Each structure stands twice: as C-alpha cells, then as structure tokens.
Length: 149
Image: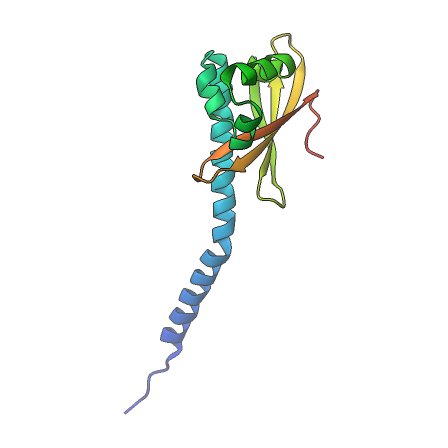
C-alpha cells in the first residue's frame, strides 16, 4: 500500500488560515472606511439641508454636544449665519482628506466655493453618538484651500 502525501490538505489548511488572518487584519480598515463614508454622508446631508433651507433637518445633524451649546434651532442658525456663511450656502464642495483623532472623532476636510466665489476649507469634526450615528461636533472654517495640518 502506498501512502499519499498530506501536502494538499495541509496547503489548503494553511491557505484558509492565511485568508482568515488577512480578513481579521483588514476588518479595522473596513470599519474605518465605513465610518469615514458615514461621516461624509452626514456632512453631505447637512450641507444639502442648508441649501434646501431645511434648517431643522440641518440642526438634526449636529452632535449632542453642539445641541447642548445651542439648545434651540434659532440659536444654532444664528451661530451658523454669523460665522459659517460658506457652509450655509456653498456654491459647490468637494471632500478632501480625512483623519482619525486619538479620541475616535473623524476630521474631514471639505473644500467649499462660497457664493461670492471665494474658496474655503471647512474642517469638520465628526463624533460618534451613543446611538451609533455620526454627527457634526464642530467646524473650523479657513479661507482658501488650507488642508489638514
């Protein structure tokens, strides 16, 4: 009786182990990518809400912390109108770089053309809420295409 080598089953087991390990290692990257996409979707929805003059909906995309600082829609909109006109009425916009902060928040760069034709960089700070949704936790607005630093 001749013995068959066990090489093929061992090779298959090794390949399966490698595939599992690779999937395990890539899972955090997939999660990070999904979080960035979710954060971009929230920013898009808020900007589109501002453009549609649906300010109540736009306010709904603010984080719980922002809502504590501005507990009313009127207060929130007053702040936006005073200091964030390019965000309130973007001519057009495009997403730039994103980064993850040590505290888990996402920083998302958005390049905006204001109604007067000037260019701005809005750096959005996105925070994961207790209910699992991403919300806008702050915006740093800079004249020009500054980028993350």
